[in-house]
Image 1: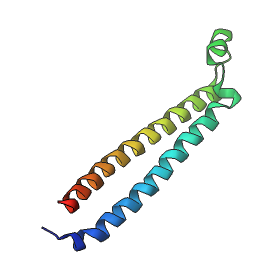
Image 2 (image 1 turned 45 degrees about the horizontal axis):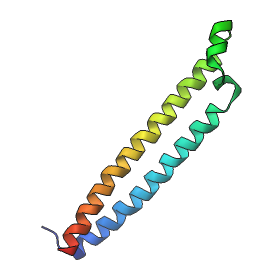
Image 3 (image 1 turned 45 degrees about the vertical axis):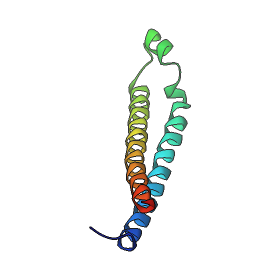
Length: 94
């Protein structure tokens, strides 16, 4: 089993990766909000009722779903990395 000095560079890289993934996670969420505020994303209920819900509205909603999915997947990856980092911190203390 590697000792603490051998693990330190890996843990540092893992923490850097987590920071990078979290930034991408936040960016996906911010982009999703931006797409949600566009005209083609707003008022889908009335657009459907009036028969005005077309391809650009569908594409907009699909893009929001994609971005929200990306956000959630990256957030979950960050949570998993957090668990590894916490476990490592506990091992170092012991």
